[in-house]
Length: 104
Image 1 (cartoon, rainbow, N blue to C red):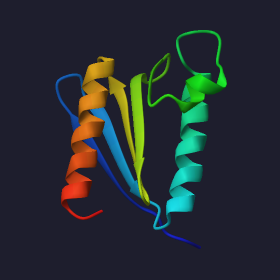
Image 2 (image 1 turned 180 degrees about the horizontal axis):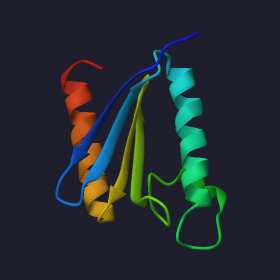
Image 3 (image 1 turned 60 degrees about the vertical axis):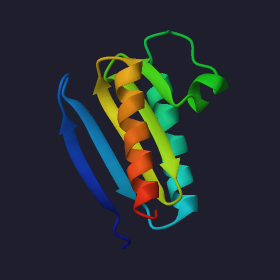
Image 4 (image 1 turned 180 degrees about the vertical axis):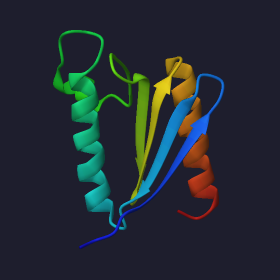
């Protein structure tokens, strides 16, 4: 069986959860983020879900508050339970910058 490395962190204020997953392969990461975005779109606050909602990087959900996600190569980054769209967006952006700085 394949192993997937990941890191889970909590950030205050608001106790946002950040998950960084290394799928080892860009194709697997793309499949994973597509699946996550589809799931998040199904739990969004608005009752209607369209294809453009699934492709959004930040949504307000009933279960996880504000959620944002991004992919960088083989890595998937997800922020959950954010207080605001800006909070999860900033956390995702900072993580992407750190990955890029570290050569990922």
